Length: 187
Image 1: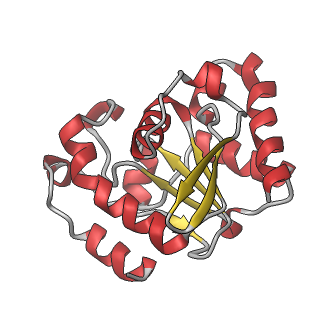
Image 2: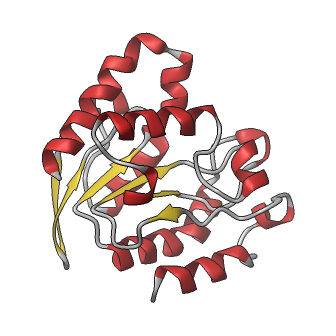
Image 3: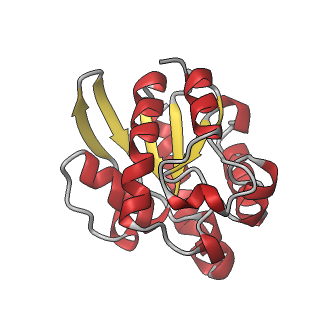
């Protein structure tokens, strides 16, 4: 299924209770043939208002990091595990994640990236579970390359600290830069 068709389905989805409190669903955005896909946990306040992923302060940091490796937002694909904002920006429940997982799976199959970047622990846990890997925590996985065999070839998984975590703990900025350097080396 084409990414655009899938996104039309996401915009009207009612598979879990999150649709009741959302302003807008946030399917994701970017190049539908991107070599790199970034996955966050779920939309925050500004994402919910605008219907776009990573548009707040964390998004600005993500844009800065992309620029440091010579990429623009339009050249990658950015999405989240769940497509609607969990109330109070809480972590998505297992039921919400299960309801949205087929959308994310279809996005990944349609895009077929070379590099997959889960941002933070929640996204890392989902990606590692999906590919049968044991999640070690973001502090141990950041900037490491995990090669996964898929039906479509080898996928490089490069976990990175979530930009929002870096905003709360600026001394870890060097570790985020290390992850983006690894991404740059792979593409």
